Image (tube, rainbow, N blue to C red; front, side):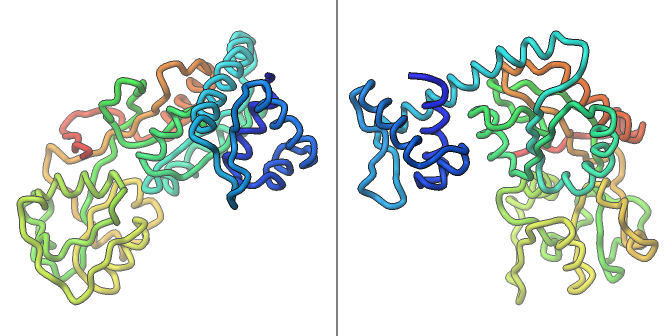
Length: 312
């Protein structure tokens, strides 16, 4: 048994096809098939059921593949330990970031990060909170940038900043003559939300206490997949939505007239840098943290006059 064989079974599990897995591993199908066969003979088990298309792992195969991911992850840590002791910040950094944050935060820090750390290879994926946690646990990404706290003992969280929630509403809303709003001012029957699966949705639900309030049935029942879609829906169909303040950066003057802020303590989401508890790429993580902190406004770095909304 060797690391190469473990890489091959993980590739087959990912692609569920021997030819595609071989291409991903830059070997011929014959070579890949031979190596898998040798591993199965050594272990005296069948790792994959080849009678099915797409190919699927057997029950024991699933357990072997899971352990293979752990083994390769631990082997990689040896290289990371050596690299982390060197003076230069280098290596691979795999980041997961939630979709409600990615389009607004990445443009702020990523260009400078790539320029300042040319020896670092960065892979970024837009993922839901649930998927980020899953991939951290499976060592498929190194760090997540998302709303915290997560209350997961397997993860280490580093708070970065506190992003205020604001109201984006059509001019016909009754509260538009107010300077500052309370959660009670929001008519839940005119509120547009993101679809299920976004932590931002659960925070807005908690802010407006939607679970304890009844919503009327509308002619249009729409759950948006992005903040930009929410803004468009308000502009086209009127109503209200609640968005994080970094989303204001690209708004024009006319759109900003439709923004209203909450009264202190202002509701915020805590944005944190999250890693699995055995993470060792400390220099890479510190470099990432520093570049993010540099671009964050001073008032977002403190919890003064703010209240963190829970994620459920």
